[in-house]
Image (cartoon, rainbow, N blue to C red):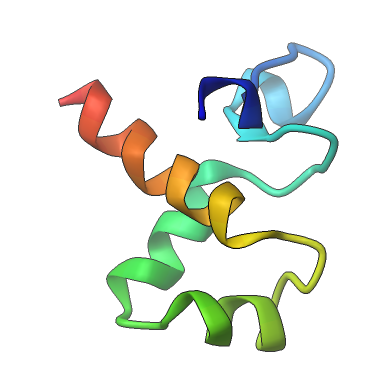
Length: 65
């Protein structure tokens, strides 16, 4: 799952993003914290993400604790 998250100083000032996108992990986590399901996030905000991408974002926040 780690390969699904990337950090580049050239994208969003080095904030972790879903690899190959400019979607920050923080944005995905905010949607999850609002109670949106993976399907809702993909349908309403980020159709290019997969469930594994969203899961990687959620797991990255657990690993930072």
